[in-house]
Length: 210
Image (cartoon, rainbow, N blue to C red; front, side):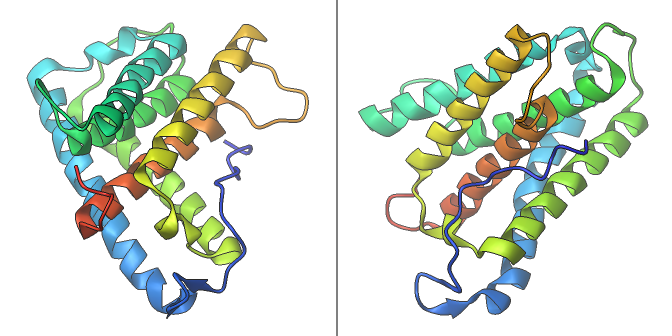
């Protein structure tokens, strides 16, 4: 996971929206991040108890494709403004977070090992990788500020799709990079972009609705 100090796209600002000092927003961000992730985790653990860890059979390219499907659906809903079936945008962002965690677990364990995991082990690993993603987000916020709060929901989806494209390219290079970050770093970015989307939806800002 050493490559996970990744490139969330921020601007070097000292305030958020020109109003709030960064230091005054950090506690709010921590709370919002934890609340958003708590909802994702609740879904993940309940599905684990219902279905087991059937996702253990997924290879990294399959996980990437699952995230791609969800991201493209959000993009379509953003453009058409009409929803006819299934989860809303909030639900899709939660699914992206959870598949991002699955990606990190599979990278760590090895996706060729398909044995079942017990729910306690799953929860332990979920917490491990979410905490790592959260720490990465906090490091970025410390260095660059919280300009992501002024970004659009559309931008988060576009950036997720860009990260997926990078993962596919790395996989086509046998998982190797010359100078760029690895697959794990891209999954961490994807998780954080999706959490940012959930935070802004939760704030019910104009243009950030589900």
